[in-house]
Length: 155
Image 1: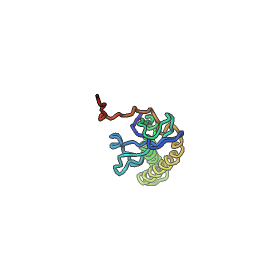
Image 2 (image 1 turned 90 degrees about the horizontal axis):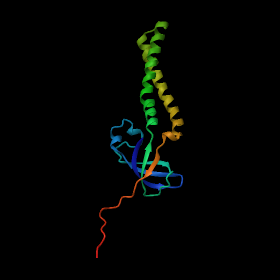
Image 3 (image 1 turned 180 degrees about the vertical axis):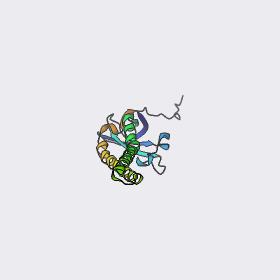
Image 4 (image 1 turned 90 degrees about the vertical axis):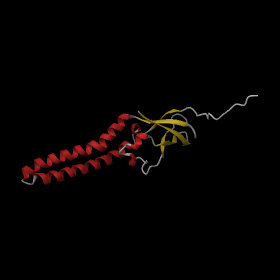
C-alpha cells in the first residue's frame, strides 16, 4: 500500500478534503504531471470518503492499494507498446500476401493499433475512475502533534 500524510482541510459526514505535501516519490514519477502536481506545486488536495469521521484540522494518513496502481502502470505504459508490436507484425504478414512494401505497411498498421490503444485507455479510464479500488482512502488518524515549546510553570 502506498501511503501519504495529510491534514483535513474540510469534512462532512460523507467526504473529507485532505491536503497533502508532495513526497519524494512524486519527484521521480513519470506521471506526476497528470495527477495535479506539475509546475512544482508542493501541495495537493485529495477527496476521500470520510470513513473515520475526521474533522477539519485532523492529521491523517491516506493510502491507495498497490495492485491497482500496477495494473494502471501496465495499461498506460506496456499496453500501447504491445499493440504497436502486434500491429507491426500483422502489417508485415499482410504486406507479403498483398504484394506491398512490408516496412511501410508494418509502420502504418503498428501506428493504427498504437492509436487504438489510447482510445481503449480513454474508454477504460471512465469505468476505472468509478471503482473504489482505484481511489485513495483514509487509513488512520495520526496523533495530534504537541508543540515542545509548551512549558509548565512551577511555583
